[in-house]
Length: 165
Image (cartoon, one colour):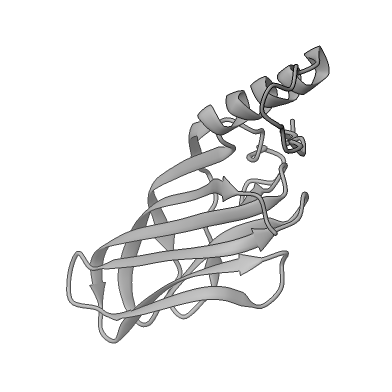
């Protein structure tokens, strides 16, 4: 369920607040205390070499705003518009001879953020970005590597950090 953030008017010294104004202040304070946030974890997903692979089969660790649904198993879907900090952490195990990539796609389109790592063993990809989002925007974590045999452990999150101007 999307959270709402009411516009709070400017008050003057000595002004008596109405019940509606005080309720708006209280609702905004409650929403800021527990902001919209979703944290997903996927352990040990086998990845096919040289293939853009969306991460699936997440465990929902935290979801304060209904952003993850089993019916859309690759997505974090924004319920409350605003600025979000997105984080993607990929820990690789196995061997790859050239590179490992982790990236985030927005609304099924082009890549929003990308991180390429030359791989040895137990390498990590980490991405943090801030994106202005509308309600219903969605993000997916993808991985890619060339050749070898790898599994990926992934933590993927979206945290509301404020209203967009």
